[in-house]
Image (cartoon, rainbow, N blue to C red; front, top):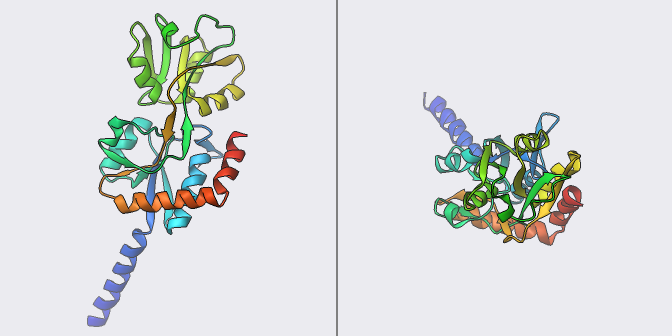
Amino acid sequence: MKKIVGVFLFVLMGTILFAKEVLYVGTNAEFAPFEYMENGEIVGFDIELINKVGEKIGKEIKIKNIAFDGLLPALQTDKIDLIIAGMTVTKEREQFVDFSNDYFIANQVIIVPENESSITDVDSLKGKKVGVVLGYTGDLMVSKVEGVDKVQYNSAPASIMALAGGKIDAMILDSAPAQSYIAKNKGLKIVELDSEVEKYAIAVGKDKKELVEQINKALEEIKTEGIYDELIIKYFK
């Protein structure tokens, strides 16, 4: 009996130790080229980057695809261990989570039909029907502009389809994915904005300071070794 119990405890301890080697990572696979679906799999710049981070810190990475506005609640309730989803560091979000060092710099742009000439900046969106993705920076930006008819969508592709179909007049999105969508959707163009730069970082729970430090060290090594530059060239050049 003692032998059986001993074997059981050994197996149980092994299972627990193995479980600790897995990090469940939340993302929203509708933000190309950072994370998107291809042949039934989640791929993209963020996905390759976090897998490289996992290798550096000795953790197996398992990706969970979650609606963007559900990512922070999932992290706060321990359904996931961290988030990588082109997420901008903001003071509001820092109240609930900690962030790694930033790994990408972006800004907001307006996407409009190719023949649109009246929309030149944020103020010119007044009186227009503007698409945003729920919880994205563009959503927050448009909320501060009076006279805009804001239409929220659950994903960037849904907003792009609405714009291409004439259901909205414009949409606001981060610069890198905007360039990706423009390349794949004829008849649309980008209006550059003089907006503040945004820093993308990996979100981690408030009680996991050691994990943040490990991620930061891994990111630094990935940049020093040239891996980061290789990913930039692969997805953005």
